[in-house]
Length: 99
Image (tube, rainbow, N blue to C red):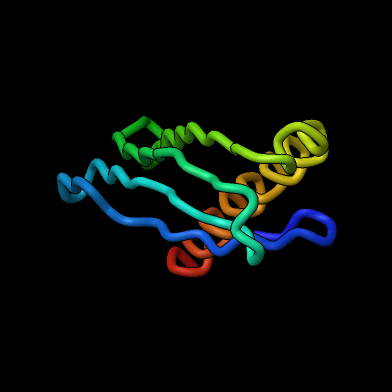
């Protein structure tokens, strides 16, 4: 993930799955200089609804280092944008499969 001039390599590791309804994962990362760290977790849960399938996505991310101090607002904005793009991509993918 990239924030301005800073780029972080993220590792997402699946920690639990209950097919076809739940996926849990941990998130770890560090910037290219090793000065900032990212840790967190995420969960995706699927459930039946009257219109099809509902997806509940939850993520908790902690950013440590100078980047956290100086860039909290841009990081929050970019992270929100990335997760919105993720949701749109999933919706488009399922729309293609249904047509």
